[in-house]
Image (cartoon, one colour):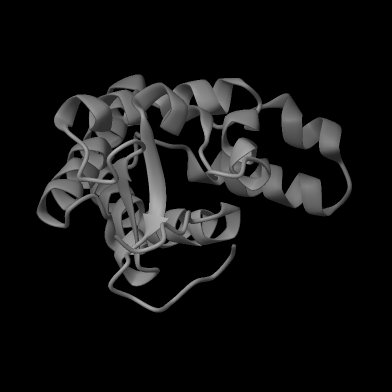
Length: 169
């Protein structure tokens, strides 16, 4: 067996950024148009950005854009399902992970994760967010580069051993 190289914070961050571009953004655009613009109030968002850019943080935070819960849930579930499809078809890798040659594996066996682990890991993202992102930041400080969502699901993110690309140690 090859030496296991855990994917660190920055590799995972960039993979997540790429997944946002390739998976979440197209879904967001489709849902925005399906909702006839009722999913998210972009004009309020733009106004808040203008307030913030002019140094008026109080005004920027005073009124937040309204969102439709129905459309927001459709967006979240759609992204989760599309990610699961990519994970299934690509042996534990979403498009961003594929580009960076990393994948999600079982933390003990380093083999493909099962559906239970995938579901637990997805729910674990909420725990990582609710801890003020500490669940994600753990990746930068742990030797095995596992976040809270990885610990909950028994997963790890490693470099694909068939590739020679390593962004961080």
